[in-house]
Image (cartoon, rainbow, N blue to C red; front, side, top):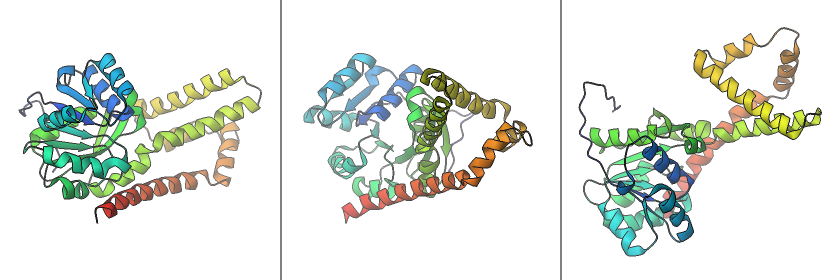
Length: 291
């Protein structure tokens, strides 16, 4: 079921209480985006982790949210939360979910941002609670994320709307079937690293050709930024834009000939396949821990 909400459709969305189970950079990106977009207030946000009081103190001071690693307080917040965001490391997911199960109430909504952790695995531990599985990327920290999302059958229209508003606060959202979420991980979840890798090579080449590192950095950053904006603003495909800047026998053609000879396009495709496969493998590994 795909959620669509238009101006004439009324969705009852009470101001829910959110509890982030994990307080790393991904959780912080959500909190910042939600507060900046007035989706919630600091009084409705709690953040917990296992042991880093310094990290929690930073979050309290910067965002005004509640944050604690004390067991009794953590249990209270998890029990009272309407939306619980699973934001711990994948290796801690099983233990955290087992800790969470007795604290859930019948209206609890689980939002998972853990790579490879399937809805069925979450529900195997927590029961048939509503689950939203997502895969954001690191650009979410500046509000330019690209997130894939899928929903369990138990999620209501209201809960889907709440989840969608959360995700839109950190960037764009693409609803997909769960079977495709590992592919989203390979494309956009790990995608920023592919772009950074290309930028590294361009900066190194520019410096080798005699430009200063500062000049190389600034030119490459602006080039990548401008290219992405050209695709976004013109609506034209990257292939069409590439053809427009490639004159037969010119400098760009000479460069692209090298990339084609070295099989760069095929290498990128294979990289995405391997990232997708690794995400699936991580999910299977978590599933095996339950058996």
